Structure formats: C-alpha cells, structure tokens
Image (tube, rainbow, N blue to C red; front, side, top):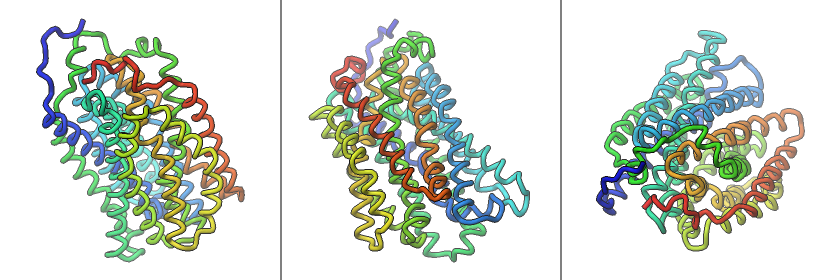
Length: 431
C-alpha cells in the first residue's frame, strides 16, 4: 500500500537542485563512456596488434560494442534496485561502477607489454562501464521525469541528453586540449590515458554530489508496494515493445551522427583528426543547446508529433546526408550536413527519456525504462560503429547508410501507431 504519511510539496529550489545534481552525475557518467570513442583513434594501436587503421579501429569498435552487452544486465539490476531502494541509491551506485571502469582503462599496460592480456583487460573495463551506463539511463530518466512535475516534464527531462551530450563535448574538449599541447606520438604512446584518469576523478566528485540528492515524491509514496519485479513488468508488454521500437532507430541515428561522425570524417571524408574533432565538437554544441527547446515544444504539442518528425526526416534524409558528407571538403559544408542531421535526431533524443517514463507506473518505472531500452541500445546502438566500419572494410560503405534508414523507418511505424504519452495517466503521481 502507498505510504499514508503526507509529504510536503517539493519547492522549486529543491527541484532545481535535485535536477542539477542528477544531471551533473549523468554528465560524468557519459563523459567516461564517450571518452573511449573520442580517443579510440589514439589508443587503438596500444591495445591491439599492428594492422591498418581501419582494422585497428574495427577492433576498438568491437570492444565498444562488447561494452553494450552489459547494458541490459545493468538496466535490469539497477532498474530493480532503483524501484526497490530508490532512484538516488541507484544513481550513486552507477557512478561508483563507472569510476572503477575508467581507472582500469587508464592503468592497463599496452599490447606490447602484456600481449593479449591488454585487450582482455580493456574488455573487462568496458563491461564494467556497460553495467554502469545500463543502470544510469533508466534511473536518471525516471529521476528527472519524476522530479520535473506535470506540465514541464519534456523540458526538464531533456537535460538528461543535455548532460549526455555535454559529456561527449567534454571528452572532445579534453581531446582538443591534448591535441594542442601534445604531439601525436605522445598522445598515442601515453597521453590518451589522461582523459580516463580525469574521468575517474570526476566520477568520485559526482559520487559525493549524488549522496545529497532528494528522493522523488513518487518513489516515497509507493514505498510499501512490491516493486521492480520482472513479473510486474511482464504485465505491460505493449509498453515494453514500444520502448524497444522507439529506441531502435533513434539510437542508431544518434551514434551514427555523434560518436561515429568523428571517425567517418577522418576515415572516409579524409579530414585530419584535429579538424574532425573540431567539427564534431561544434555540431555537438548546437545539438546540446537544442535539446531543451525540443523538450519544451513537446510539452506544448505532444511527444508523438516530435517523434514522427524525427522518423520522417531520418528516413528520407539519412542516405543523402551521409552521401554528401563523403565529399564534404570544406568545414562549413561538413558543419551544415552534420548539424542538419542532428536537428532531426533531436526529435528523438530530447524526449525519449520522458516518453519511456510516461509509459510505466511508479513501481516498475526504472526497470521498465532501463531494461528494454538497454536491450535495444545493445542490439542497435552498440553495433552501429562496428557495422559502419565493417561495411567500409568490405568495400560497400553505403550499405550502412541504408541500414540506418531502415532502422529509423521501423521506429517511425512505432511512433505513428503509439498513443500520446504526455496525456497518459501513468505519471499522474509524478508531480
């Protein structure tokens, strides 16, 4: 039964402080996750046997994909934990795991020193980080959505992706700084370890910050109920299927035009590593600033029209944009193409967290958001870079463009047939 003890309404100041604290921790989590991708161009030589750049990047991308295998486990364990012990406790635990994974990457010797043990330890570190990120998404999406209050959920929950993108930008910013202050030889030899040390230290700070977060009213008022069970989740098969379906195309598009874009500019278009990093950073900055705007728009016109807009634009525009990006020899053209793609992707990223949270009741919300999302991301997002590089390695890079298009088109079918979640009663208690 719900807790009968009335809880004083949360003040705006408490709400803002809690959203900020949850978002900052999210930033650190995703910095640690994405710094791997940002620095793969430099550390691939350290962990793998000598080979061509494409093959070494393919090996690094394979390990990146392996990290996604633990995300469903993290989504299940942390989602269950968040529904039973609280959103705050789960958010704290996920940062702790990420800190450990970053330290492992930073301290692991290279292939020349310990041989095959190097990639094995790298895989172990990514599995630990995958467990962390798998739990982070469901817990943070639930926490921010419940803290936001009715009428502003789209806007406030969009800060999950604001801080996620900010984590990517921070990773790229560290890369740009090191590129400006170190030689390429030093970066490949040992400089790539610096951002992982920074990530571990920042995770320790985030761990301290999250210990002071307010718990959400929704969780507090359902403390006496049985929560976080797979049996209870199985009673919502349509909601689970909707999470998988709406995630598939969105996550492929997101990873294609963010983390993989930097490698695409170097490996396909022919830009230098430094120039590709700058272009990626500038487009990500605009992408980040757009998230609250789209989130606020969804509070006024609904979530479904925004998702459908992404689905239509992504289905029609992916192949033309990537084909044009192959031949982009000037920075303004590359910025325009990537920027246009990310404007479309914002229709998914800005509101996907709140849409998923609005599908489930409080007692299984973190598990319902986290587990099916993690499964979809592992299958579609985690393999995106690997499939793109594989298609290039066999001489048919444009196969990947059509793969992205088909994934987005599949999600568009879900967007067009699902209900309007902003009017759902599933979050009537999340004020």
